[in-house]
Amino acid sequence: MSAARNEGARPDLRICFFGDSFVAGVGDSSGLGWVGRVTAAARERGHRITSYNLGVRRETSVQIAARIATEAPPRLADAEDARLVVSFGVNDATERDGVERAAVDDGIRAVRTATEFIGADRLLVVGPPATADQAQNERIRARDRAMRTHADRLGVRFVSTFPATSRDTTWQHQVVVGDGYHPDAEGYRLLASVIQPVFLDWLH
Image 1 (spheres, rainbow, N blue to C red):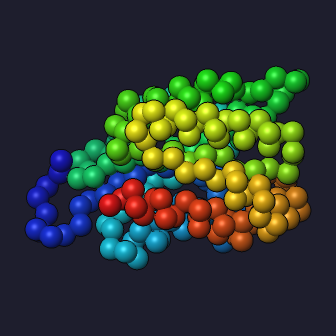
Image 2: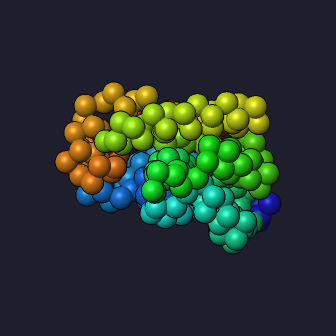
């Protein structure tokens, strides 16, 4: 793709992280979020990684997918190894006047949009975590399963974060004492620990 590099050196790896407030790391007093933590872990293992955090609060899968074609190209131009991570679902499952903000099929279409843009092997999909609202959690669980099923059909790597966050007492406590959605640093550390093994394996 770009200029030649020394033989044996790691490639110029650039990753756009598209998503919502969980990608942005809202609520994390350390300022790292899960994106900062998995990026640091990749650098510690010798990856020459440039990460772009493109998380936007309150956005649904529809809004996130619509940004990919315009926001990713200038950041990935000339990269030797260009990739995308997408994560969404909690805002989709939020109800307004009894209607979910986005349908399950919208999330599936967003996964397809990202796949068509970057290619299945260069895309990682991260499923939505649990919240303090148990009714919403049932809707999130359904979306998590649908996204995983579709990602598997497309040959895309998928990380489910819902099981771990729905049963972890630290996550649940931090979400409850927070805003009902976002944890503090310990919660994001848990989220990163779930995502990191798959993320690092995907980089190889």
